[in-house]
Image (cartoon, rainbow, N blue to C red):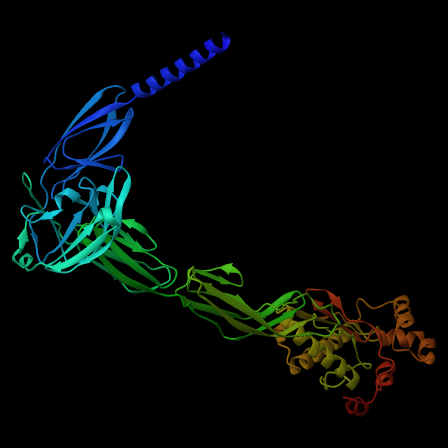
Amino acid sequence: MRRLVYLFTLVMALALGATAGFAQDGKLKVKVTPKKAYIFVDGKAIREGNQTIPLSPGKHTVVVINYGYKISTQEVNVDSGKTTPLTVALDAYGGPVSGPFGQIELKGDSHAAVLLNGKTPPYFVGHVGAMNHDWWWHRILLVPPGTYHVTATRNGTDVWSGDTTVAANQKISIDVSKNGTSKTKDKKDLAKRTSEPRYKGGWISDTIAVAGVTGSFSLAPANINCGQSSTLTWQTTETVDASISGIGPVPLSGSQSVSPHATTTYDFSAAGPGGTVKGTGTVNVNTKVDASLSATPAEVHYRKIGEKVLTQDSSALAWQTSNADNVTLNNNKVDASGSQTVKAEPADSSQVPEGQPARTIDETKNFTLNATNVCGGSSTQTAGLHVVGSVEPIPTVTLQSIFYPTDYPDKRNPQVGLVRSQQLALATLAGGFKKYLEYDPDAKLSVEAYADERGSKPFNQDLSERRVERIKRYLVDQGIAADKIQTAAYGKERPLDKPSVKALESTNPNTPPKARLKDVRADWLAYNRRADIVLLPSGKKSSQFFPHTADDSKLIWQMPKPPLAKVQADQ
């Protein structure tokens, strides 16, 4: 019993489910004008004329189409178990079609929709029954001469699909029920049809004249640089779809800007029931990058003394590029064309310590310009800047106090008394000071002359003044400007005391003879017959060591006034 109850329950459930599924269907009742307009539902060809079509509940896309009329496309909601009415009256569209014509005759499934050159409703030209008889009555399809892809379809299934070519004043008959078996014959009376309406329907007759497609495709400019644009322009008539290679579907007529990164060929194609139109054009892309880089002048000078840069030339680095969208100079982004000033800058400009030899500069600084574009073009240019010069230590100014023989120069011989060894010391000083002026143009020399204690105060004052003036004149003769020399004469004032002289002699690199060291007074007097020289503004003072090792040191050291002839011989 339990098994019987279970089986009964199962059967009833299945029956009720089936009944419920059936109850979910609805119907769409379509009334069309013209009477032979064709109906597509959800992209599937249904049938021509007024139809009642069972459909599942929900929204459906209904297309009503008749060649020579505007297509009607609308969303329709079908309710479960109900009939939804839909009335569609199409408006005529398009003028007469001019010949020449060819004729395509189809036989087989008379209710199958016929599409030329496409798979969607806009390619529909009629149904098989509207083009299957040309004897007692006429149901004919006229097309421009050409090749067509013919599709006969119904209820979502292609009855037959294939290519066929028809010439002017020729008829081709195709049996879609026999896998497209065809035969062709001339039909001279087609020549009389010079102009036909797109659609003419009667009780048992139909004439469909399909308009041929036309179109044009062009581009300008045909030659561009990388990054520039070319405009594609096209126009078509009687087409359904249009596309351009590399772009995809496009409007049936229009224009579009393109910026290809390489030479590109654009193939245009537009199709309609009356044929296809094609076009092609090539945009030639110049990917070459032109670039130049120069440094003017190509050689610059650099000179540094101590911590001061005295000479630092500059050079104008100039570059130009074309057809480039990214430009770098030594890996730094710059404008496509431009210039910048670069200074002479050696790799090592560190200061040379005083007393060390100068460092010679002879090196080339390279600049690299890289110019590229998004099209793969590139150019690399280099320019070298030759840097020459030197990094020098602060010039050494050898400051040595100058010593005079007793009572020289005298009034009658103001030029006599600066003996040869002291002239050489001043010449060395002058050479170093002139170089030092390159380092410090504001530098000066201060010459301070003294006399020993012998003689009156006025006598020694005059003597020290002659001594300082003689030194100044000598330095001027060596090429030092007079305004660079300050003078002071102190006579026998401010003498070095004997302990100071003793201390100097103990460290004197010019080793004094023992006899001179024993004569302390004479040595002390010799030290006070001198002129000190100070480098300004540094304050560096001359060394006060007596020149014992000079050839004429005895002449300078002795206390009695030496004969004029002897001093003149040592000038």
